[in-house]
Length: 447
Ligand code: TRP
Image 1 (cartoon, rainbow, N blue to C red):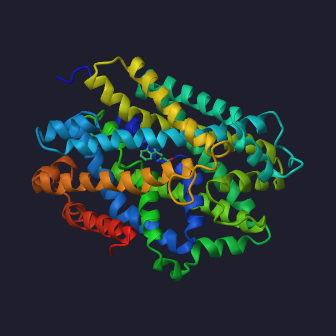
Image 2 (cartoon, rainbow, N blue to C red):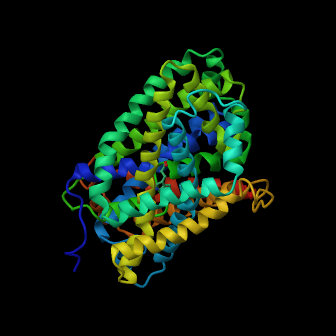
Image 3 (cartoon, helix red, strand yellow):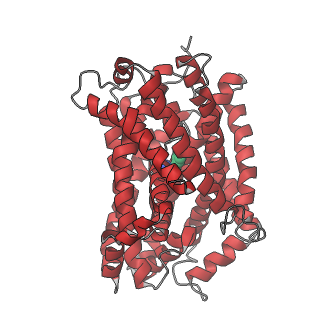
């Protein structure tokens, strides 16, 4: 019945798209600000543990459910468990994807604005007020950030409506390696700054006292989900375009390691600079947008590095945003029988509107703080990443562990005859759900 459903051209095509989805603003912008807010080293350890124990096993769960069911996030649960309530988690996934892309696109718009300012030479030298103030003036204004948000959404929509494989594969083949090379070059400069060692200590020398704070655990778990693109069905949808003969376990470990590499290396770039330039590590989401230009301004050919860096970052963001848009688009194409074009444009517009709130929350609507001290953007990020993603991830783990028989779960994941199979199954069936529940209860103050 699914003969017209799209397919990846090859396993490599899937790998590139999934890595493209995983590697994005989450590794550079989000990882550094969340690590900075949560004390650095101890957070890093919790984050790495979350990736290994929960993240990578669940990545395999998501992709294998999608490949087995060959449907979108709602449809996959309905196909594999007809008339059972599992599919309700699919709706949470669709909603989470909309929410995340709403603010993600605003940040990606900032990245495009930086690219533009480097391209025109404006940011080659430090602006009169400094990069921090220049950034603040830009983000608190109304029209300009919205314009870049719109441009970024148009870009995302255009790629999604031309079909998944053509656009994304190419961008990933060129710009991911470029981003990796640039980041490695940047570590050298960052480490040569005065005060770099303080940054390295912050990132690698755990201050265990922060572990007394429950919010650090949920932040690490949320970051692991966000960075691996888990918990909205993006990886499930990508998995649904795979053929059955493509083996999954190696692919998912590869995606996880690649993603972690990008996060750790950007930490090594950013934290030395944070301390060298006297910026507070817990400055929040604005962190990379002030530190990176400061590094570039001290490097030989820094302006050109800035052009390349923000171009690569923008494209890394695009390859992630298309995976987010693909979630509701795949759903609407099936349920409303809309064309890919119509579904992409409609959903893209809804997301643009959601993003308006996130963008204005930086300036005109800054007084509106839905959760605690958080402005609109941070609140969207917080709810989506720390509540929706782990919750849907929990359901997915329970689905593989308890709805499937052991044999079904192992076969779906291509681990039927693999010695690791048992371990993975135990992690998915017991360990990951228990950890997620404990962290939730802990955050709510119940434990
Ligand atoms: N993982 C991407 C990043 O790190 C963002 C992303 C893409 C995402 N798809 C997702 C996050 C699905 C959560 C869910 O930038």
